[in-house]
Amino acid sequence: MSGTGHATPRVVRNAERRARADCTGAVYGSMLAASVIIGAGTLGSFPRLELVLLLLLTGVAFWIAHVHAQVFGARVTQRRLDRRVVLSVCRDEWPIVEAAVPPAAVVAATPVLGLGMDATLWLALTVAVAGQVGWSTVAARRGGASRGLMAVTAGVNLLLGLLIISFKLFLTH
Image 1: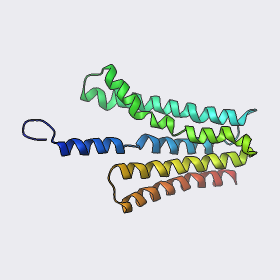
Image 2: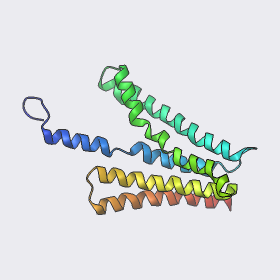
Image 3: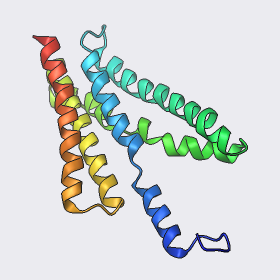
Image 4: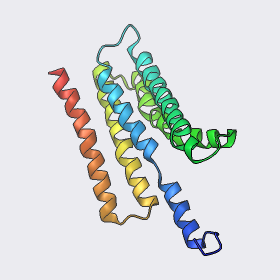
C-alpha cells in the first residue's frame, strides 16, 4: 500500500494472482470425492446412480458447510454481511462441487464402457485423485510457483491420493 491508502499496481497484480491461484476448493473437493468412492463399498439396487448422486450431493453438502463457515465465521467478523459477500463466498467455494463432477461422470459412463462396479470404483477413484493432483498443480502454476514447487505440490497430493487408495486396498482385503 502506498502512503495514500491506495494499492500499488504491483500489490493489486499480486492479489489478483493469489485469487486466481486459489484452487483449494477443487483440491479439497477431489479428495472428498475420492473419500466418498472409498466409502461407497456397498450400494443398493442401482449402485451407479447411487454413487453419482452420493458424489454430487456430498459435494453440495460440503459446499454449503464451507459457505456457512466462511460467511458466518471469518467474514462476519471482518465486514457487514450483505448479498454480494454471500454470493462471492458461494462462487469461491463452488469448486468443491465441481470437483465431484468428473468422477461422477465417469461412474455414469462406465456402463457404456462395459465395466463392472469394481472397475467403476477404481476408475472413478483414479479420476478423483488425478483431479486432486491436477488442481494442486494448476494452483501452483497460477500462483507463479517454480517448476520444482509445482512438482512438490503434485507429489504431495499424489501421496495423499495414494494414501486414500491404500485405505481402499486395506478395507477390501
